[in-house]
Image 1 (tube, rainbow, N blue to C red):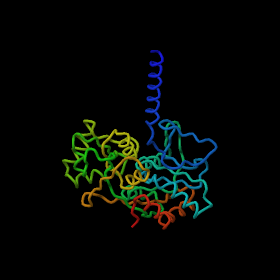
Image 2: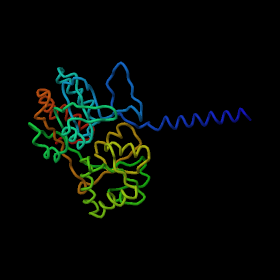
Image 3: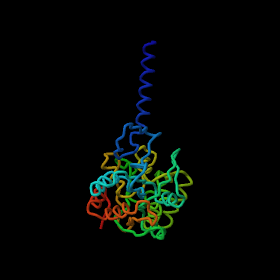
Image 4: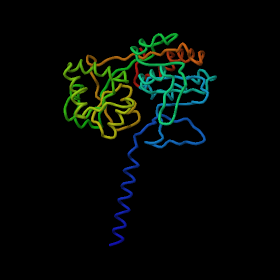
Length: 304
């Protein structure tokens, strides 16, 4: 009897351990971290997916609109190949609104980390770049994107379009328009698909009853919520949905028809006060090069 009881306890402990080990099985960083003497990434605790590269004495600092995080590894590798003089590069891929606040305030604090680096290049949607135009020496358009709906594998709720997200039983993950440009783009798409009533249903009624979740950090929360079955569906950039499929994660993509979709335009701006002006010029030229465009197309962006 005692042996049976012990076996039961052991099995229960193993089952619990396996469950906890799987709690973070889809967590970022999804890129390949740079190699160092100590590799210390702890899922759910010490895991910094939106800061890349060398924070000490960088030769180039780029603030990217966060939806391009999947491109960073290959972009930086291609840039360093074209410009081997730049070895220490620091990149952030936080939401563009947060990055704009960082530029304005001169610093950002994440956990216990205080970052005061100023960017050489800032990228965001066309509208935000226009609002900040006075900060830039020059700007360049380099990529485009569109929206799609990400759902769980098998699409168990049979989501067919944006209108279906208004259903009371559908748990929606939605980028917060307060700091995510995509949030404003999606609300415009809701109006195209179902009028003001659909927008109000998803962005007001369902927020209040808890069936629409507004992201607190980054729209990369939406794929994670769907992967962990915390949400049923969420509008995302097509590139983000494609990336999840490239990773082999259990999701499916529901296309949004052109008449209900939007087209985002990504623009880079070289800061007038860039700490590394020549590196900034070289990176701006690189972003519109065939090598950079090939990386963007690989991950579902358009470049024409």
